[in-house]
Image (cartoon, rainbow, N blue to C red; front, top):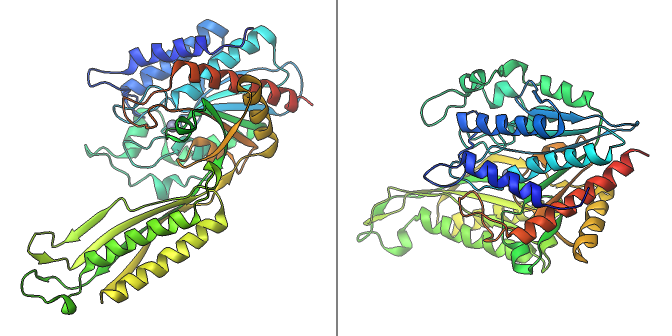
Amino acid sequence: MKLTGRRVIADLQELRRLTSDERGGAQRVAWGPVWRQARAWFSKKLHDEVGLSTHVDAAANLWSTFKGSGRGPALVIGSHLDSVPSGGWLDGALGVVVGLEVFRRAKANGTPVDIHVVDWADEEGARFGRSLTGSAASAGSLDPRKELAHLVDRQGVKLPDALAENGVQLNRMLGAHTYFKSLKAGAYLELHIEQGPVLEELRKPVGVVLGTMGVERHSLRFIGQAAHSGAAPLHLRKDAFLAAAEFALATRAISIKYSGKTPKSRVVATCGVVKVEPNFVTAVPGSTEISIDMRALDAKVLAKMLREAKAAAQQAAKRHQVKLEWNHLWDINPRLFDETLMGFVRASIKEVTGGATELPSGPLHDAAEMQPLVPTAMVFAQSSPGISHTRIEDTPKAALDISIKSFLLTVDKTLAHLAR
Ligand SMILES: [Zn+2]
């Protein structure tokens, strides 16, 4: 069967027409009707074109299997059909829909080992705030009682009720882990759009993903003294905002210090939340909450960044005579991808384009949940414009075609490797 991205792109355009509304953008928010419609569409495609059925596991992950002719560990290919509200047409969908093309090729050419395609449930966490839900359940890293039982959406719907609407029982979700282990997977591959501007800036259509960055997420509160903006002399102030502002600038300096010139060695730090109190124009800020999200592919570098950020916060607090509270929100270690599989990705991209660019992923993906269990690799398609989670998210057709071809070649090499 001819190597082409044409059919996958046509399928994605069909899905886009089916699941966008008049507001524009994909409306495939997990656990809702449009998401279920997208899954029904995909299941019908699998049935009509390759004669396969689908089934859901205990965490609502949607699975389909093409049986191999020989022995060897299985290949799992996955991503997510769910989207953020008014999201893009490619985020997640690309990596699931390409699975149909893998099956078409398996039907035409055969496959030595089993191939499983999975649409992970609720990757985005758009409605309840917990992302990677389905893949974490499969990986056995999810604690449904602790992490999901209390979650409520903006309309006041409880997550356990939304799950029940979709046939999922909270206390049985880890059955997905038992199912995953029964597959005896030997490799996990995911094709995804980059969602950032790195490949676009380098004018590369496709890239080898080295792993997902580790994340350190914390919330700080500087506590000073609110005072009258006219009456309080500068040297007697305890201005909590100025301490927070100095901290924010320090984290930028830290991220610049630890960023190398190559995409591989880039790190990031972001202060996304700043809440000033009492928050009016004639008040010296008495208290300021500020968040920090730091990411790096190298765990040692990330640990140094965190240490230096803590020291910078203490210095800023001291300089402005304010107190500091530091609260840990969340962290994950870097998830480095498998050398052998990355070698297949590199070789495939070279075959298609002549060279292979490497970059880490700043965003997390389902692949990050798979990495501790099974050798894992990802292929990134260029995003242009280099943004995502918006309806203007896009990838030029030529880059999409090249990325799909590179991924399909990676699948061929991985299958040959698993069959040995
Ligand atoms: Zn995604």
